[in-house]
Image 1: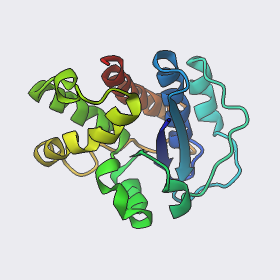
Image 2: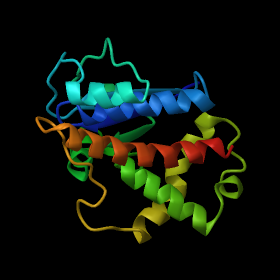
Image 3: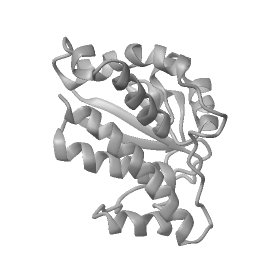
Length: 194
């Protein structure tokens, strides 16, 4: 069994491939072969490679983006996805228009990290998910444990969004990478507990 995660942004050449490749890299260090991270765009620049700005920040982190090709999000590709991680709330709305059944399994990258932290403060994950033995069981059970937290941990519109660095300078790509890295660090820390 594999836990399938998909990151989603607009063009699928800057933010979502960065998040996909970094999250895959980090999860592979703790659970090799357990997670499969993919990505797509709501208005993808289909078949294009990763934007040079994201290639640079990925390279600085030891991640190779060769062979990547942007894909257009559609309902079919969401069929087997366990958790969707859009980069903005607007992307999440588009994901849900394709697949309403992902309502409780779709979080912006930063929202998931924030909710994991908030829920853990209420009750440690090791207690909460004690019966979920495998990573697949754990990630299948996770949304039900986050539902209450999502209701009480609301933030202002846009606060969980990661800005698009497309056609901007290196600083915009560094800022995007720093935000995504911070969220990934918290997501991976959750999985490391088990």
